[in-house]
Length: 389
Image (cartoon, rainbow, N blue to C red):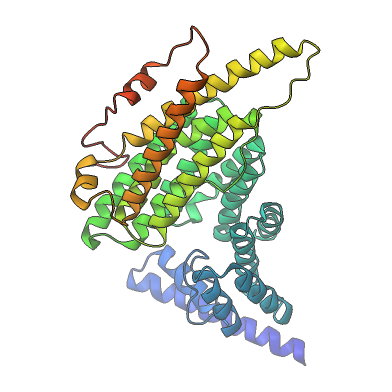
């Protein structure tokens, strides 16, 4: 009897969907609009990155409120409790995905990776969530130092990008792919994807002009430049700094828009990234050679070269600031972009002192380093995506 009732309900739902599709076609409504309407009727979330639709179960909405308020441990507990009480609903994959997000923000990257992988494996019937899970898998693998696997996951996500929101598919994902190719020593592919991300950002800027300064633009910029907080191992220094140099402009732009929490998060990201790079240089591995003096001298040379390389990256970061804006609001302002500028200034001064003290005899700074000492800064830098048609 129960089986008969379930079958009858399924027939009614499918019949309603068929009638809806036919009616929409008669009215000239596109197939994509039909799919969105059908998914909403069946209770699917429109996008796990956004608020759940009103039809979501109350327990799911309560857990999502914690997520939105950045109460990560409460969000994780809420989604786990929801899955325990309602293990098989249309919201199961979204809840599992958001557990991954909660774990990620608690810096539990390995656990988050496994949760995203679970969503990806079970998400054949929900390609949008499956694609987003692959994006986050790429980010988690980067955080764990698995650059080759990170690139593979992002490429898999790219094949599912048609089902993602425009901002993720056209801006965030290409920016992450570009950074991954930069770490993989493939500058041609890196620049190709950075160019695609910049073009998409330009289109988003044009679209956002109607809204003034929409919150979502700051969120997109932050997503494009964000890297998970992590230690930078000595052997990964070159890979990390290469990707940071090109993507840090997105975080500066996010800070300038002053939309919270994205502006402050962008400031924190850049501060943490440069602190991790400096710490990596200071953590010189112990020489293993029997010729301890020769090995120590070689490590000193490598440390010096990395300090110079870090200084060049800071110079590029500093050139992104519009000094007129800093002067107008004053160096004591609490605006995110001013806080970032002051932090960069202090970091650079400390780095310069180290470079002067540790410079080996006969070594000279690069052209970029010499320019940095003269504090040469472009007055009006052009950011990625600005000036787009």
